[in-house]
Amino acid sequence: MDKILVEGGRSLKGDVKISGAKNAALPILISSLLTDGVCTYRNVPDLKDIQSVKQLLSHLGAKIETSGDVVQIDAAGLFNHEAPYDLVRKMRASILVLCPLVARLKRARVSLPGGCAIGARPINLHLKGLASLGASIELNHGYVEASADFLKGSEFYFDMPTVTGTENLLMAAVLAKGVTVLRNAAREPEIVALVEVLNQMGANIKGAGTSIITIEGVPSLKPVSVSIIPDRIEAGTFMVAAALTRSDIRLLNCEPDHMKGMIHKLRQTGSDIQIEGKNIRIKGADEIRSIDLKTLPYPGFPTDMQAQFMVLMSVATGLSMISETVFENRFIHVCELRRLGADITVSGNTAIVKGVKALSGAPVMATDLRASASLILAGLVARGSTEVNRVYHLDRGYEAIEEKFGKLGAAIKRIR
Ligand code: UD1
Image (cartoon, rainbow, N blue to C red; front, side, top):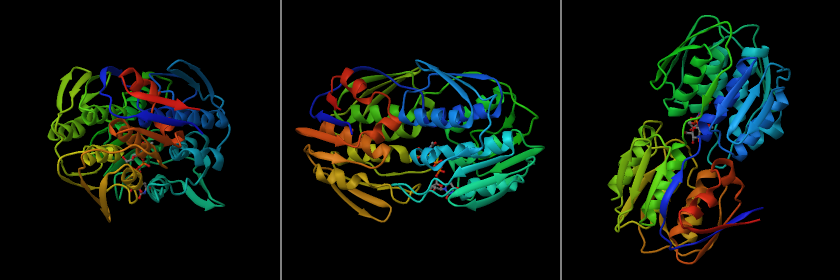
């Protein structure tokens, strides 16, 4: 498996273009299942997870063509209602085909995703929500089997806001008979992006971006041609890199409105951040101030940026308290950061980080995507070289990460 080698201590300079958002692209590509014509998607990032979703969609009968960052999907020939274990296991977001399949083919058989490194991650709310729209659901041999002659609008309350749960139910309700109201829905920008696409396809959805979303079902949807929004987590990761290495860089093609929580927190650490339309300029401070943070559903601070901020706090001037409230086991990176010299104590869902003068490079590995990104960041600021193993996780969610950091002046290379 590939590794990434980082030689720490270089400062970064220049511009970096932010790619399309993985977490927006996945549900949006899957929404192509809801219509039978050619949908065109631009600004699609070239990632392992995108390859996995394309593999899954073609397994279901969709025709897919890719040219650069443009992906065309035609699900007219959708015939297969089964998402097998081997495809779902690679990428949990595969569960998003459940509702579109029931809406289009009246049935679906989708492997249960199972737990993952960061927590149990149940899908009970996806299933309860689909059942409330009239589907019958059984769990057999590790598969969810759902069927419905037709779906019927209903009111559904999410016990907690779930991003993919909200997206899945949106894709059931758009073709249901009558009105569906989703309460305590997730409010992430990726949900708003999906709703904009669905509305362009002819759906009638109101309230996206708030916790109450109302969907009036329509008989059918038409194909679309749309662009994927920028990846706020990739952008945030580069911003933390600049803050860590006390550098001056510019992020091109981002959506600062989606990143207010992160920008606010980074300013508190001392970074100077200027918003220039769709670009962000960030200058890291000489002295990184410690701050506390707590992850929360959007618009709170994103759990997908927790590991990266922990690296920043590892070399800050005082004590920082980081609470993870979204996932129950999202401190996998702590042991690896300690191996690099970080001083971190964990108690329950809280990590206390005591800033140290410097980290020192070492071989490390992580078992989840954002934790792996945090190790690259640590490598950029550590003394000596850091070897990040299991790059597979990084490639799931960061497009050409070593090339982008390389262009900014980092000493980083991939070893195949
Ligand atoms: C999505 C993102 C992921 C991000 C996460 C939280 C995608 C493809 N992935 O994941 O990058 O870290 O949101 O922002 O968009 N839960 C239940 N029952 C359910 C569903 C969720 O209890 O049926 C719980 C989860 O275990 C977790 C919390 O709800 O504790 C939030 O998870 P959720 O928003 O569903 O995360 P994902 O959609 O899987």
